Length: 266
Image (cartoon, rainbow, N blue to C red; front, top):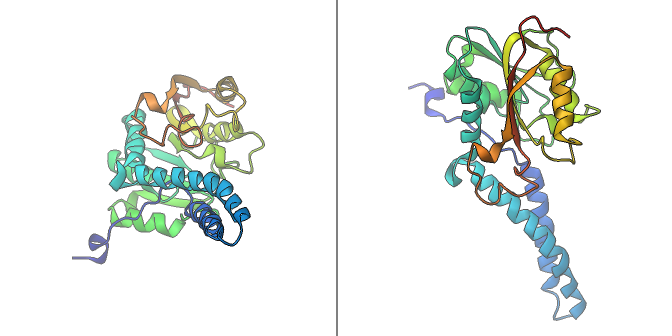
């Protein structure tokens, strides 16, 4: 039995481990400070920041649990929803913008045996993803020969216009720091979709912290010369248990599905 067969693919959740550990550490310090109250009742004031940071830590930890296999495997189910929404793609090229640890790329490669799938990501230092991890996972899952992973920014994708038959993205556009407007990432991803091609995007399109309004997103899609055939809340397609419906988790997550009309250009 080969080493790759014995090994299991390692996929990370969308929650930054470093962020969770920082909030947990601050919560611990605050709790320890309040334990000094026998010396002075003023130390009880540490309970105020402990309540705040403890709550944030709880939300993050429960989110990791819900997304991971042991807590419902919601991240896998969401990726499978994107694959299902994309539907059959004739033999061709598929692009995943913001591939993380490669989970969605692998699922696409398995569902589309006649296609090649490319994943791009910036793999910033504050994320626990890497190109090597993606390549390892693809090799372990048996799809390394039909997948490729490249370090690129979603704000400036290094492929020609119309170079892909399908484009997907999952929880990425709001994370693109180089984009002046988050909707610019949507336009850039659609630029590389060929006329007649199909796209499926999931992001926090309903969150005004990132997008002024859903109309702003609609206008970005129209600016790219692409139609929308489906737009709706993620919660309408996948049950989201607590705390995934929290406004700082996935309450504002929306799916956009559509096609680029044949003959469409920039």
